Amino acid sequence: MLRTLKVVNFAVVERAEIELGAGFTAFTGETGAGKSILLEALGFLLGARGSSSWLRAGAASLEVEGVFDAADLPADLRERFGVSGGTFAARRELDAGGRTRAMIRSQSAPLSALVQLGDAFADFHGQHESRDLLKPGVQLELLDRFGGLDAEREALARAHALWAGLRARLEASSMSEEERRRRVELLRFQLEEIDAAKPRLGEEEEIDEALPRLRNAERLRAFADSAYGQLYAEEDAALSRLMRAERALGELARIDPSAGRLQGELEAARLSVEAVAHEVGDYRDRATADPAALDALLARQEALSRLKKRHGPTLADVLAARARLADELDGLENADARLEETKRELEAAQAALSKLCDEVHDKRRKAAKKLDAAALKELKVLGLPHSSFSCAVELEEGEWTRTGADAVSFLLAANPGEPPRPIKAVASGGELSRVMLALKTVFAKADRTPLLVFDEVDSGVGGEVARAVGERLAALGRGRQILCVTHLAQVACLAHAHYHVAKEIAGGRTRVRVERLDGERRLEAVALMLGGRAATPASRKHAQELLENTPA
Image 1 (cartoon, one colour):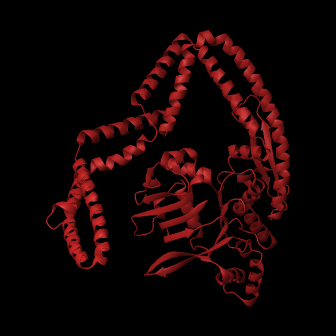
Image 2 (cartoon, one colour; image 1 turned 60 degrees about the vertical axis):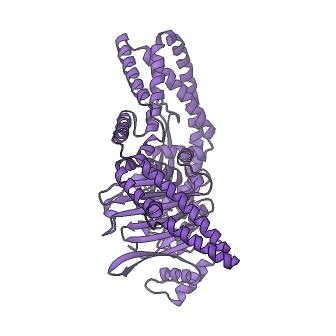
Image 3 (cartoon, helix red, strand yellow; image 1 turned 90 degrees about the vertical axis):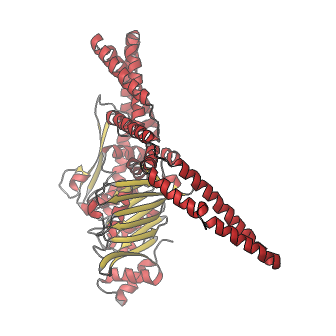
């Protein structure tokens, strides 16, 4: 769960800090007040591309920080950044030059780490885009979850890995001697290059941490020397003054024993300051310019950069590439002895994979029919009564992958007489958001995403449909965290928490104010949403009726 979101100098938001809880949270306010900017800032924190145009006028940089539950961070990142129970903070900054910096637990982190967090933690649905559910691979995965086909997916992955490995070994065996020789030489060269460098995970972060100290060694030594002098070495330094004060309190305690406590506390403080002074002195002695060490670190950074250019964007990709290269080299060097055996094994593996793909295809078609009925029911409730939805499952013979041989596509015909087409191609902004909400409701038990973000999912609806949208969001919020920008009182009144976003002018500058609404203030805000420019007795009564059904 996202516990806190802090946004600084992001567009018109000078500074906003929001405490969030579980369930459905609604953001309301006039058009242009900055509601969607908050969601955009969250997207930036979780890896979306940044733009220097977001920078508030006159600011040197912008910052977005979130405090998350530790369990939301993927396991490999938890281990990498030392995140254990409780919460952790992630931060991302952007300056006027378009440069960004990412941090996890105050440690420098690659942007890919925030992207990985975002992919695992949040799913965004706006009027103009809906990221994950529009990807064919995600549609296939969700259909399998809906159909309870996790075991089948694992079996497919194992069968495909066996088949692909045998096919690669057979292809290696069919190379000409000259081709094989050249390939072996290339593989050995690439492996030797990686092995000579000996890359290890986390090394880049260590370099990023050490480089500033080496580059600024003289300045660091000067600062440490100044601090040491103020604490210890210079005439009338802090420790000398503390010792004189301690002696004076000792004399005081001889006359008045009740002052003995003060002398003891001052002695403890002096000992702490003395320990700090010694550490500062040690730091000063270590902070010496070392051009050779700096050159070595820069050379190491360049060597790792060359490896990443050849084998992948991260060191993890480089290490994975090394494993693949080693396997291929082993197969090439031992190809002849395994040729006949490999042919027999490949034939059996291909037959088993093909049979498994056919079996899973039939199960997917059955699951797709159930999904069609469930999605269509939700769409009618959400104000698309004439739409038709279908999940197309097509078996592509011989096109085997680790998920089988099926191509899955969610199709929609938004109006009568129109042929079904992929949802992204036929749905308008508001329709698309409602389609996403309908599918999210259907997939609620199968989808593991902890946070769903909706930007004006209720666009173009009203009345009973708006109420239905709010009920769906509240229902989704019982199992995860929901953030939604809305203009409709029927939706906002069903939220577990309600925030109002407004612009105000102070000191000749526009800024955004975000405040949580409870009690009478929430009643007044909902009444204003119902009444237009001003709340009326009738709108207040209507608001009271709506809020009586707000979930606890």
